[in-house]
Each structure stands twice: as structure tokens, then as C-alpha cells.
Image 1: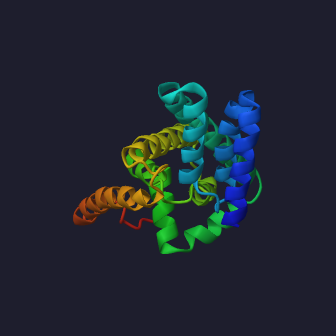
Image 2: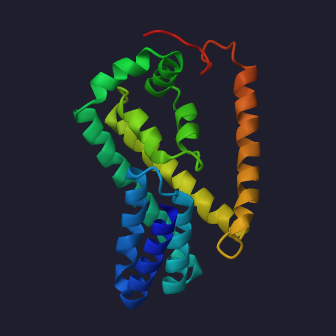
Length: 211
């Protein structure tokens, strides 16, 4: 599957080199597809967009275009799936989720007033965005709140991948992605530890309250 994916990117790169006006279109389409298909890595897609746009429009303009177009494409893909699931099977599967303790915790967090925890979860670049989006589609979260959370989280993730990826030069040295992941998970681990220490708080995300 991944061999096909990378071969596909090489074909797209060649098409863009021959037709540079198609670069912005593919800049939106690729993250759009990633939001729908869980097996496509956003890290690789953002790196691809950044390399293409940097060559075509320069480092600064290429970085800006990568952030804007990748965010737009990722959001549109996630929103399309969100609407389809909500209008079809959401009610049926939501009942199944509520039967599970951790499912109830997730629903309580998403449908509650504390958006910080949800935003942190959605802003994790190493979690498949499509899976999180399927889960969000089963909740009763308002569409306006969903749009705000999705756009914000997509922007955070893509900026993280662009700037931290550039810092570790993962396009030239792909193995440096391990250092990038180490830095990220160290920060994430500290945040989770903080939440666990404060788990007895009434507003803690570890509380399992029935609605």
C-alpha cells in the first residue's frame, strides 16, 4: 500500500513539474484524501507539499501556501465525512459508544464546555485524523464548534509538521522524524501526567459521568 502511495506521489510530482499551475490544486487534494483514508500519512503529504511549493514559489511563499492549502484540504475532507456520517449512521453507532466506559468519557469531553482537551487530542499529528473524525461524527457536538475545532487543530498540526519538520530537516534526512516524534511525545507525556495528577478534580477528563 505504501509503495503504491509513494509511487503515486512521484507521478503527481512529475505532473506538477510539467504543469506548475496544478500545484495549488494538488496541494488541497492530497490532504483532502488523507482526511478520508486513514492509511495515508499526513506527515508525508505535508512534506511533499512543502517541497513542491518551495521549489515552485520560493521558501517563504511555499511555506505559507503549504500551511494554507494543506489546512483547507484537510478540513474539507474531514467536514465531508462528518456530514455524511452524521446524516446516516451516527445515531446507531453513538448508542454502541455509550455502552463503553471510555466511549462515554470521550463523549462527555467532546460534548462538554472544555474545548482545550478536545483541541489537544485533535491536534496530535501522530493520530490518524480520519479515525478521530469518525468518532467526532458520532457525538452531538455543534457544527459551529466542530468547524472551529477542526480548522484550529488542522492548522496547529500542519504548522507543527512544517516548522518542526524543517527544523529537523526531515526532507533531506527522513530518519530525523524519530527526533521530531521524541520531542513531541515528551511534551505530550508531560501534559498527560499533569491531567492524571489532577484526576480527582470534578472537571477532570478521567471522570466517567453518565448523561
